[in-house]
Amino acid sequence: MIRDKILGMYLGTPIGDILGLPFETMEFGTYERVTDYGAWGVPVAWSDDTQFTLAVTNSLMESSGFDIKSQAQWHVRAYQDTTFGWGSTTKYCCRKLLEGVPPTEMEYGQTKGTGNGVAMKISPIAAYMHSNRPGRIGIKEYIVPLAQDIIDFSRMTHHSAVSAQSGLAQVAAVMYCLSVEPDEFSAERFVEEVVFASEIGLEHPELTDGPDLTTRLRIVDRLKDSPPEAIVDVFGGGTSYVYNSLPFSYAFFLQNPHSIESLYEVVSAGGDTDTNGAIVGCLLGALHGNRIFPDHLIAGIPLAGLAEINDMANAFNDKFYSRG
Image 1: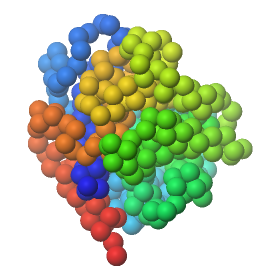
Image 2: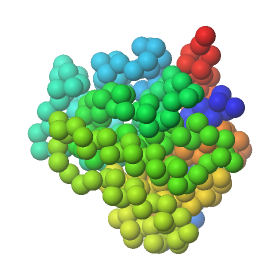
Image 3: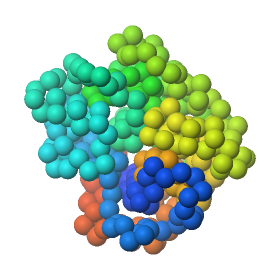
């Protein structure tokens, strides 16, 4: 089952990314409900959400685990390949990494980095951490000593408390989905895990001040029976500002965590549609495995990209889940 879950996690990211890309920054209600690729003749392609997820995975594979210097090197490789869809903060920081600035000593000029760039790419780190978690240790107890690695990873491109909180929350979210069977999933437990993890980010003084993401995450479960427009209104339209984007994505996921409909709904709700879609797709896949995705969404991934995703998921499983 874990092999299917890891494959689902890796498939869900590009599926949500590709599905949402044509509608990025559009407002709720300005286009029809999205259930397939290729809207308005836009080429079927993924963006930085998938690009960085693959880069993060390549670093984990090369280093046989988390290494911040390796992560920086793979971010630079991604920068040299293409910056299509990148946020200004990530481009700035990758230029600095290319110039030789250590990833834990980044300086930011006028920007602190409060976008959703950390949450969108961190799922492979969550899966790696999950593969090392002894079965008797709860996610809460396990994530505390690992928090500094997650915060360092966030600071490399997003030097803000809210972005570190988002990385911690998404690690807990993915780990929880990987850890339970679909019929064991609890929305209340999901929220409890991400809230606990996000609070850790407030305990590190090296992060800049900003809004507390935890206050937003606490209320996502209350919206699971609300109409889409209510979620849009509460969470600022689901923009790329992670204070909006992450709770927005979680709220749509929790409305229907057992159906592809939650992905269709979040992409159809506007805002940063590709990243919100990638986050929800990732969680659906991590919970259910690849079977949650309709054949047309899997087959619609560009052929070379689909092969890369499958190969990477299999290699990841073999390396981290087949040990000992």
